[in-house]
Amino acid sequence: MAKDLRGFIAELEKQSPEDVARVKKPISPRYEMSAILTHLEKKKRFPLLYFENVEGGRAPVVINALASRRLMAMALEAKPEDLARKFSERQAKPIAPVEVSNGPAQEVSKVGDDADLAELPMLTHYDVNAAPYITAGIIVAQDPDTGVRNTSYNRLMMAGKRELRIFMAIGRHLWTLHNKMERRNQPLPIATVIGVHPLFSLGAQAFTPADEDEYAVIGGMMNEPLRLVEAKTVPLHVPADAELIVEGQILPHVRREEGPFGEFTGHAVEKDERQVIEVSAITHRKNYIFQDIHAGYTEHKLMGAVPREAALLKAVRNAVPTVKDVCMPVSGNCRFHAYISITKRTPAQAKNAICAAIAADMLLKHVVIVDDDIDVFDEEAVLWAVSNRFQADRDLVVIANAQGSELDPTAGPGGVNAKMGIDATKPLTGFPLPLRVPDEVMNRIRLEDFLPQLSR
Ligand SMILES: Cc1cc2nc3c(=O)[nH]c(=O)nc-3n(C[C@H](O)[C@H](O)[C@H](O)COP(=O)(O)O)c2cc1C
Ligand SMILES: [Mn+2]
Image (cartoon, rainbow, N blue to C red):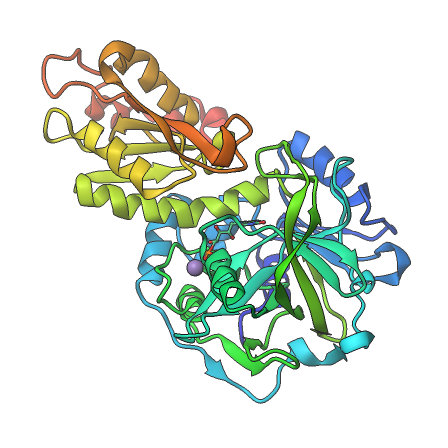
């Protein structure tokens, strides 16, 4: 069976039922689901949430399909600390998609004026949000000259029965495709894919060159070819096993107000004049599941971490072959901070690692390089290394006025911000020895023999 969202949930309920929480009481997508999620986040609980009974008889909603490294590790068949490595492995082996004549994603098809976005259970997360949004929509678009397909998550604001407004970060692939078409005074046909297997979500975010077909990258991530069907109203192929597809086009030379919207930084982004999508069809499974990703919450941050960590690992390895691990922690929105461990072999390699990391990821602001005895997934251990092995006058790198994210709340106009590198590695020689109880004694004196009640 093809990998899809409902198959993943069924598998999860079988293998790890405590990771799925079904809400049976009627609930509104306007703030109420967000309240449930907020209560759980405060308790640091991140189960996959399945809202079965959505007000107005609308489709059920799933949130948190990628809210923990453990869930992603399950999907990728890897250990949590190996996610970036496994992601890189699969990214290096794309699998071409296959075309099929029909698929569940088109069981119900509403074309033209029959399409109505108001039927979807789009969520309103925060008091500042201007309208309900599609937040788990993966936009597929094709380069008109090369035929290469791109995928990216983009927030989509509800603006009418058949109108969405879109935020495309400037310079990214989707923005570039739209820009190319706009210069020709033409619309860019797109399809928005909603409700997919977590591996689809991860593959869709891979850092890829513009000439690589992202459907093949997604296939590689899923370890099976993606099944595609012809879209109803746009010249594109769409995933046959998605829950829901919204077809349409990004209009040339049209800008209308989008936002405010609460973003991944935990802050609102102001309204601005942004691009407009005219919807031409909505297709879905008969009993489709709607997916949401809560902006600024753990899932949103973590799902972006793995593709970025994979890209960083690769870039830093070019500069420092003995790089060990990379973690982009939730405290840095999984984008602004990176903790990188290296097995240091030459006196100043940490500085090279800092430069490589900063150059590789535009969103990254702060990099901490530690020795390989520090677990980068243990934030306290990383800060311990900073406190003991770092001197600001010698080990700090600051780059002023670099390109960062437009969403960084402290950045200047156009997302210009500062980058900082912290070398928290010890010198190769002449540093005090770390503390250790002799290995022989650690292995001989076992907790289960002396304090069995505390050994688990
Ligand atoms: C949940 C989520 C929401 C996102 N929202 C947006 C968005 O609204 N606009 C945007 O430009 N990028 C957004 N991104 C980031 C893009 O999906 C990501 O940078 C993508 O890989 C860009 O691909 P591209 O360069 O191929 O267009 C989002 C990512 C995630 C995980
Ligand atoms: Mn791309």
